[in-house]
Length: 564
Image (cartoon, rainbow, N blue to C red; front, top):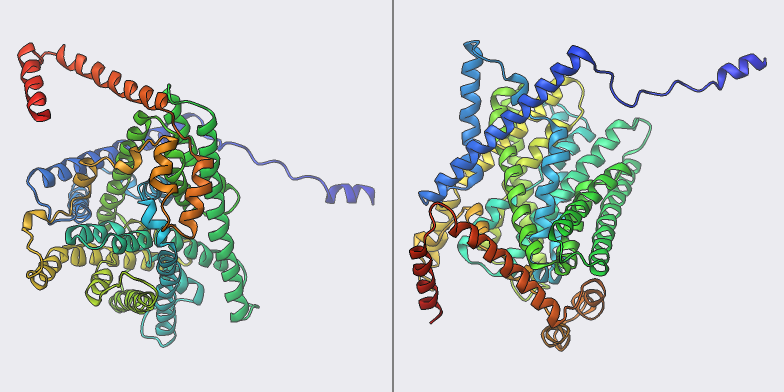
């Protein structure tokens, strides 16, 4: 009896910590990973040259995402021809790996979105932004998912169960903000309206991912004995836990980073300061994923908080370095995803059903309309800045789908395999449809609006610029380079009487607690640091093969004339 009991409670052997790969197998894995890295970098390099040509030849009417996806399609066709001729086999290298997207590519994109947000307008319009991003995205997901479910039950399209339909509706509701903001910048619309759409687009990505994870969680569980109402309550509880838990974790991490860099002065060693910022940027993602929360939601709110508080505790060198590094990395990650989106047309095993694709496109457009128009009319009752019907139409038209739906569709663990292939193929078609057709229709739409607005405002075509990279490269945000002394801060913020709500709480209590108020000596040291680096760079340039004393005198004369 004792022996039997001992046998029952005997511990199972521990799993090996590392996969056992030695000898030839390990060498093959290393070679495969090396080729994948080489292929990805080669694709990004070609896309960078393409974006440079767009800027050089002033093809501003063409969104970069459209050009990169088109280039990816051409590269995929070229590789397919090479493989057909048996000249090479890059099948494994050109396949997009969802884990690589969620671990390496998506976090920098989301963090940069939160970090580059204009915080004043964001916090003033936080209620409207949450209404659009949370309730609007949920409305769109329910309309698309419910439509697919009931059309399948009616044998009009391929039949999916409730959780799979809702998962697809959730992932396809993620909107790409790049073309949206390009349109609004080209139209020079009200900055508050610009922030509404931009804030909604950024939060919308995180909400869509959480909704998709919610549907996946329900799929993994056995819900056959649970009623529809209980399923809804369980899904709602899971969503609220993921949303608010991840947002709280990201906010807490951002506040801790602000306090650390406020009380530990790393301003005189920018390399250490920058390293600490990079660690805190990725820290909430790993922690949230490790405790079964949403890393994307956590890193988004961490980026918003770190930009609002932590950034102002940095030296001027690190401030500029953070802005440009985040923009560069986010650009490369976005470019990589859009290029592989084009490549996937030839590398992905497809299952195409015309009726399913057409009805999904109709439901996506209808769901976006039900999201935008009713919520905009509702918000107009409470807003001083009204959203006009023309702007509502532009917001609906700008609902492009991008990288996130594509990666989420590959990440879904649906069975059987044909269902996964159908979802993936349909998602790729919808993304390409919105990017190429709606994105390509951006310029005609702007011209149409220009015709209608020709009387009050004349604007030449050269002012319309849809190049996100050129705009980012030509600007350094002054808000992110502000270094205020205690007296300047009080004069600019504290004595303003029109602040209310969170803005007043932030100005009077939160900002002074989490950010360092600089003395005149601190400002002097920061200027000396910047001047020293600039002089060092100039000395190296002057001593180079192309530098000369005549060039130096000419440069000094030009700068003197400009100063006068």
